[in-house]
Length: 281
Figure (cartoon, rainbow, N blue to C red):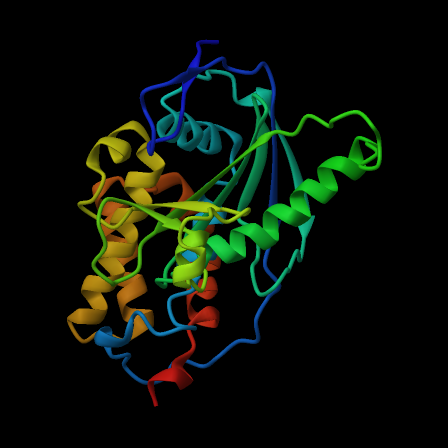
């Protein structure tokens, strides 16, 4: 097991690799099916509620230990080799302030939160703060730590990454800070706020962050599938037609072959039932 470096947002310092990785993921509750009859307007792909399937599909694609390990290594420039060193626990229907956790895990005294986002949201730091509060509460409770103790409690460092693949044009890498949302007044300009939360947004749309894609084959394939579905929608296909075409292209090109062969029906149903056609009326 080799050492690891900090995430993509900071590559200058190195950290020791831990011998065990503890990962927890959560699932979103199942929405009611929505019939798909009309052609969607590809110009409205940023609208809240549509194409949210990409968030859930992201979790499904990375549910395998081997693929999770590959994503973690790519982001952290680490070299873990044994997927069995990932300890995964699943939390069902975790919902907090409208935010459903994608992946949260503790490794080498760093508390990580990974989120997949298909719509641009400048309030991710606020959402992250709320979720980290819950995560730290769980950390303290699970270890039976006493926050009223006279001894300082050592806590893992928080790290928050957002994997973005919406249609809004965004840079390869962007930091969103909670402090940028604070109401500022001249009299307080010289005083630093007592609270901060930084969300590092990584653009994973097709053609972006190619070095990261090259290091994680699964991420590359995921971006390719989403791009193919978008091309079908832009070409005037119904969502169902765009899904069928996108999956067909992937299978022909050897993209997500095993995953789509095994889960093709589930993936198609997932996308169709989570697409909110009513927002296009």
